[in-house]
Image 1 (cartoon, helix red, strand yellow):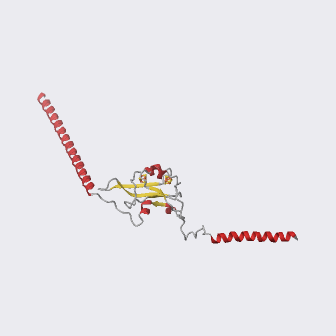
Image 2 (tube, rainbow, N blue to C red; image 1 turned 180 degrees about the vertical axis):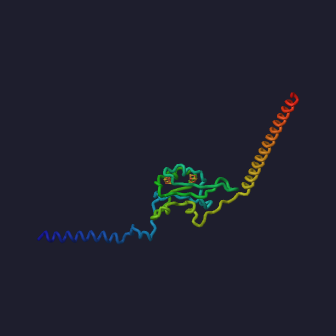
Image 3 (cartoon, rainbow, N blue to C red; image 1 turned 60 degrees about the horizontal axis):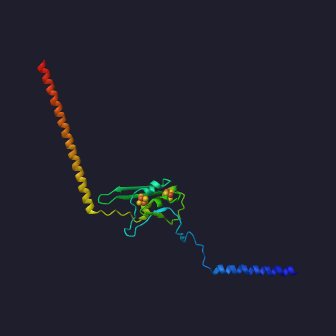
Length: 204
Ligand code: SF4
Ligand code: SF4
């Protein structure tokens, strides 16, 4: 009989403890989220795919197209394309392709960049069945509204044009000098040939 009451007391005790925990959790702010309807705030050390950092002063990237990230990537998944634009200092970044299918998130590229131009993003929602969805142009991602054209410096443009003109002139002068030298050499050799033939005729 005493076992019967002990079981009832034990059951009530368990019920009390269970309800206490339930009530406590009921009043506590939930730590779960209604994913995917609610965005998850990632921790600062989380490593998503790399991304270009937007410079608040210029409103665009800081990439100098030096290529150190591309060279240092052990998975060969970065491709930086740039070109020289007249009147713009250095080379202009035209595309920064990341093949995220082979990226190991090792961080070599971020460490190699001496211009603080790339970092790890907080992007986590990347589920897809298509391989192409993991090939990113980071420049387009930085400027989804359209990639801005670089600002041309008129002074630099003028200097570059003058330098180009001077180089063209020097090349033309060099070519003309070479042509004159060749002409002179040909005339000398023709004269020498004529002189030889005249002597031979006189002897005969
Ligand atoms: S994190 Fe590593 S593997 Fe990924 S792009 Fe950078 S260097 Fe390459
Ligand atoms: S991201 Fe950095 S390392 Fe890579 S090309 Fe640009 S400046 Fe160079």
